[in-house]
Figure (cartoon, rainbow, N blue to C red):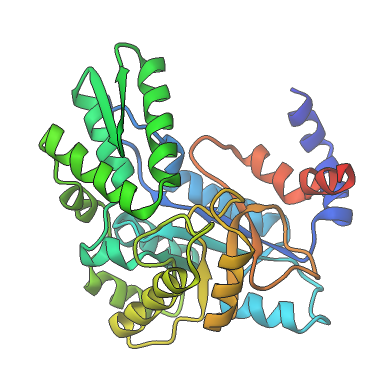
Length: 334
């Protein structure tokens, strides 16, 4: 009630005038209505088409100009051009509904957007393993994770237990080293007779869809590594192979330059100074995180902040995040 009252009084606009920076990059993933009666481990990954349309309307009504990543880069390097705040719509990973549901909305709304594509999901060389974990939890009463020499068993008789198991297993797999991660996935596939690559390919774009999207002036195809790993602590050669290799594959796929990049997961647990430096060395115009609030004039182009918006948020959440108050308070506490 307090938030609604504050928003109704326009207090967020007053705060935004001081802390809202020069623009914002909005981070999303999927555009779809979730399947009825199916439990989802991370429902926030999906945004309903109507919610996306409402968000576009809000941004424009609040005076934001929706621009491409190239135009955002131009404005950030031309420091005199900040009369109008800009917003970039960005979608991570490369889901098939970005073609089926997002693309028609972009054309209808004349709204540019960027899709950060992890090429292994498109080519079938990598798995979106979190959907495999979700599939197991939807059909079994127990989940067992074998990693290295240890074994964790989760009973999932209740929704609370199911969610706890999903969160714990996904966090463990995300933060494991590559060898342990791949071995654990293989064991899980054998134990549960599951083909995670097949599950992934059902959910992601095809190369021909990526090419068609890239050819449209409203869409920017951008890099997101090959296999979507956590880059923190990764050896420089391996991180370069993931980042530069994903870029090269996208350029082959689209026959266009790929000038922008987003870090997988994009938070402090997944990105360190070494990963940022590798991305910088590859030569992108911009690279983005998944956290951080509005864009300020002095932000590093190799680690631009974004604002998350998903199915668990409403337009009040977005207006609060656009105000920049949260990051400003965190800076003051430091």
